[in-house]
Image (tube, rainbow, N blue to C red; front, side):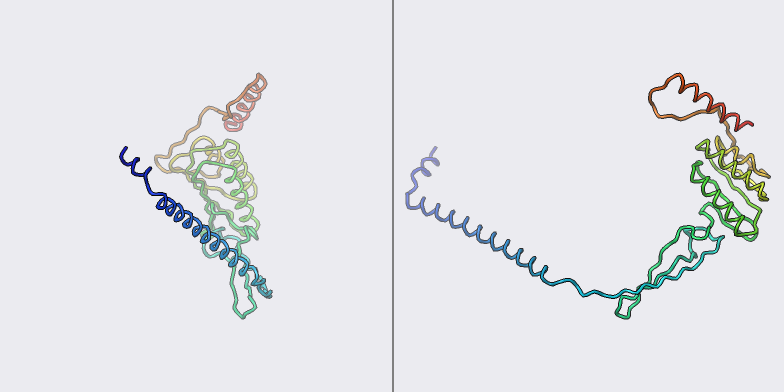
Length: 245
């Protein structure tokens, strides 16, 4: 209460002086802020008035170097297409670009040693495996005289239709004169079993686990009708007949 009493009895001259000081501080702050904004705008205008850089002539020379058909994609030693760019000042900029499978190269699933090809399937089966095997068989057929293929399998299975498609690819390769030797290790289960079974020669490391199971269909949760259930039953019977037929 005493503090409030002292403040309320300040001299009028002192109070007016304090008010003027506060107003002066605000005016000074406003001037500084306006000056800062003006300088920023001035610097922006100066940078915009510099004008566009003069045009430069760029000469691009592209030289394509073919990759050997037996060399896997994405590994060291490949010869991508090369480009040499002259920036007009006498300095060359060397760039390169990769042309995917430009002349039919083996995928990273396969490689060649001497007169034999080696293909490895060490993961769950997908459509990508079908694509790579199809690619590699055709590269071997069209670009080499190699017909001896070693297929190494360590797979828990995966997509049923991809397993059947891989088996079909091997059957076609056998008709084209390829001799497929399958080497099993670890586990060969579910959709990977027919891939192993259709090979010309089958070898398994001691302790390899083979597993087959009843046909099953994965589906997204949702509504089912009687027609859906009958269709799924036909599909499972079809898959079962393909596997055991």
